[in-house]
Every structure is written in structure tokens, then in C-alpha cells.
Length: 95
Image (cartoon, rainbow, N blue to C red):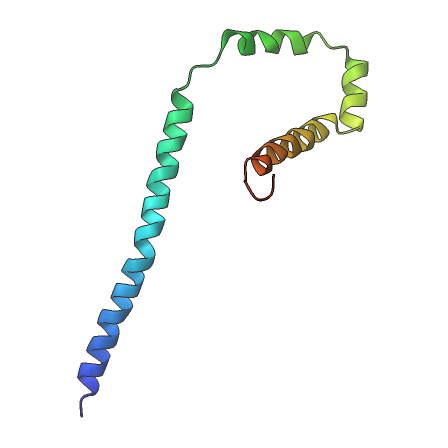
């Protein structure tokens, strides 16, 4: 008898739930876009532009062994561990 009212209320509730899920996603997206724009606006230091020439001078035999030992991945892992340690030290109960 009141099925039309029940379906109408369910449609309104579904719309509200979708809207409530959409708002945090939109805010998160806007914040991340703002952070990306801020980071892209930071100028590259001159010594970083000069570093490309310094890496070009590395002999090919050294580059072969660096790639064989995955030196690039190892440096990333070590730096990530150092950053994580720095962050964890800032937490009062853990650090």
C-alpha cells in the first residue's frame, strides 16, 4: 500500500549516502591537487640541474654494476627507512 513511499524514501536515502561519500573524496582530491600545485611551484635549485652533468661522467662499467646490484632501489629503501624513523621519533609515546 505504501510501497511508493518506501521506494521514494529509499531513493532519497541512497542519494544522501552517495552524496556523503562523494564529499570527502572531493575534499581529498582538492587538497591533493593543491599540494601538487604547491610542490610544482617550487623552483628547482641550480645544483640539481648541474647534477645531471655529474652523473653523465660516471663510467659505463660502474653503471653496469650499479644496475646489477639494484643500487637505485637500495638507496630509495634506505632513504625511506630514514624518513620513517624520523617521523616515528616525533610521536611522543613511541619515539
